[in-house]
Length: 225
Image 1: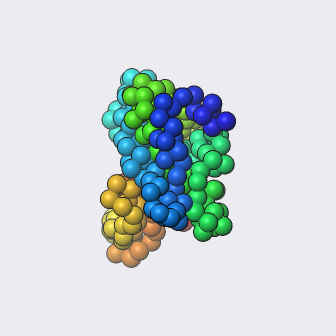
Image 2: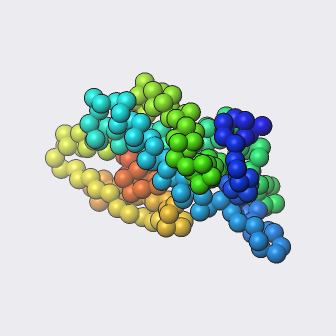
Image 3: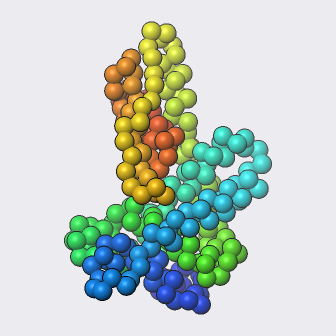
């Protein structure tokens, strides 16, 4: 059972059901009285950021601010939350509309990652910060250790800059190419320009993350691991 794996018993079960309701499902209902999980996801995202930052600050006192920021980005990224969703079995429980179901929505990382944040938001509303903290700490410590061992928070921009600086004739800059999604959950696309020509692009939940992904792509194109 998903509730058993989460480790929290809801007093208000409707919050739990809302957390598992994707917008595609809610939009298909008649009359439209079912709410989707987007507002809970917005709240859960903030709780996740706070609790993970608090944990990393206290457990990695040797890391400077920049490294803490990179480590937090690694442990709360879409891929991490997708893995947690699969571990919990959220992919089996989430309510999807027919079109999303047929389109493979149960395996879509963005949908499952958002559902994890929505469940966290529901736990916070139902029981407060301590059970929400317990849920976050059921996965953040091990994901943080894995990220540190695997170097998951490399600064690709700095690595690329060091390569480009060896040739003084070359210039490097980043340019916003687009943004999509609601204000609380935008996905940014950044272009990387080498000598004024678009060389690579990257996407992320912030402009900085998108720049890192663009730099990573550029490094891979240069044959750098």
